[in-house]
Image (cartoon, rainbow, N blue to C red; front, top):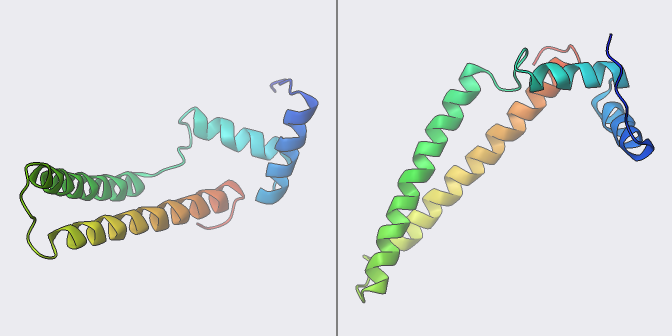
Length: 117
């Protein structure tokens, strides 16, 4: 058993968050504490692998955009479609990251509530 002190405003926010998660305050705090301590991590190995691949893709796109910016700064004109293609690639990866994070959050919330993720 652990005793934790919260200000009235903090406790109100905690109650609201627990309610949104469909949990009691005790279960909510316990779940978050276990995740924060790494006992029951929020992200699994598969999640880290997916995020790693997406981060690699974003780094590669960032490198391309930096090369385009350098070329423009030296007065060179990038090949037709190069800028638009890199921006489109960045948008696709960013959208995929947002989708993956939303799914990971949903899955973690379901696991926190004892549901099948």
